[in-house]
Image 1 (cartoon, rainbow, N blue to C red):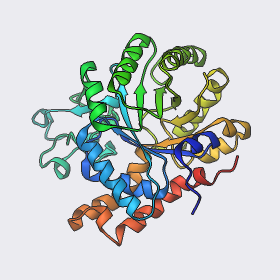
Image 2: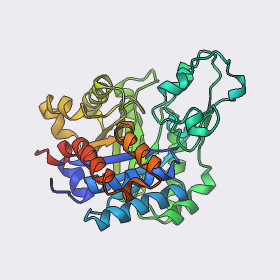
Image 3: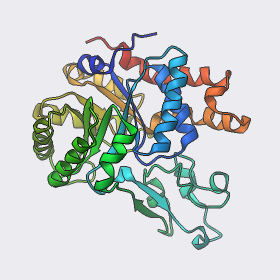
Length: 345
């Protein structure tokens, strides 16, 4: 197995790998299983919703992985400085659905969060939904709504003080510099020493150029520097689409190529559309690969293990408790993670 570096060392050497559980994902059973398997596979950080039950599930997964000989990853919690697609859930009233509807929403849902099997009735299972938005465009009747979830400012400091994460990720968008600065004040007020503050931003859905996005990141850099915080720039190529294919991986790499010459100081990590194609696409660019600290995997990681998670559910026990299934899950996770752990600069 590849050597698993301490998280800060992995960032500086270009070996960093993060698992994204989902900023609004509250499927506790799968979060525990995913955290355990990917921690054992060698990821350096697991990023999840700022929710006590979610954090407890991740720490149970960590404890299992450490008992198998894994190094302890960082716990990173996701926040936003305003409305953001990562902090939403789908909702619809199934009573309004036509009886003749072929239910394309159910077919396109990567989290298996829609349908009788998921919910007991033909609706959305909120705990599983992580807000990818594919069902909203698939609904022929336009019945599916997006319901945003943003943590109130006065709740941030006490929640972080309770949960004690190693790092925080702030999702931001153009024009929200003041809201970002307010969030950073709330991080400071928590009294928690944060190893890194990841700043997640991209161009998807905006009319901005790479130069304009870089200017926004420089403004965020100034805010973090004033508070003595160390940034990690997360470039979000195609948000929540990594389980789609090579095209989304190309979008993440293209964003990095455009932004890196303009970015403020600090390690740069790819996200948004990243999957098993990303490493090869980045390696083909040679010098660009040497400037990238690492990668985050979200939807592709969950989709990869989903059949085994469902099999464990049918067997009536957690994946981590099934001695036949978890080694198979580990091999799948290692196949995704190992190219980044093995990369030599």
